Length: 192
Ligand code: 5GP
Image (cartoon, rainbow, N blue to C red; front, side, top):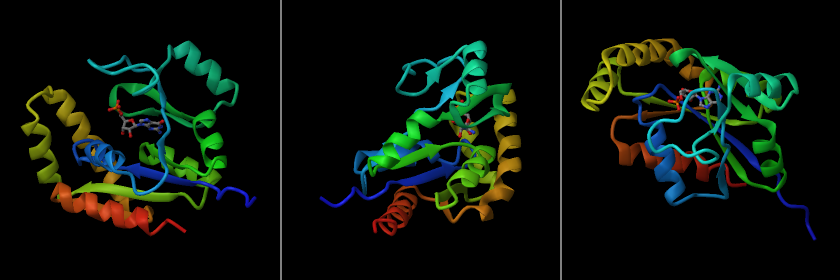
């Protein structure tokens, strides 16, 4: 029997408010390949509706530090928003790649650069807003965010957008359906 094809690592980044999570959710609704998510670990508290082991593994700072010291993370960082730790567990990635899956990581820029050191062939995709002005408009239109949170996200976007050219692909989310088509085209191109 032929050996199963090795999987692919797909990294999707982009500032919050650019529509990244919505795009990934839509992608999984009709996946263009054997897509699976990697569930990240974090020290931040669950938001309303978030489920342990589905959205994240919610760890105490001590447990996170213990796993970090034990070398369980492929990458982990203190992410700007709120100063919490986030990380990708090796156990989420390696077994799926070995099983031929396409493992999707939704992580920030610093995490991406670290993963690329280990997996230089990872397919990197940066989802960007049309402009900073449009990003700000979208964040405000949600109507659910405190001003301080909006400012923190805008600051994060200003820090991350200059890294977009370091990604193999850039998807500009001007219109959601078109951005989804672009994402699908990129992934369909990886299927060999
Ligand atoms: P949120 O708290 O809104 O779920 O995520 C905040 C930020 O953390 C996002 O930019 C997201 O991409 C990033 N993030 C989520 N999981 C990971 C991870 O495992 N590693 C890294 N480096 N960043 C992550």
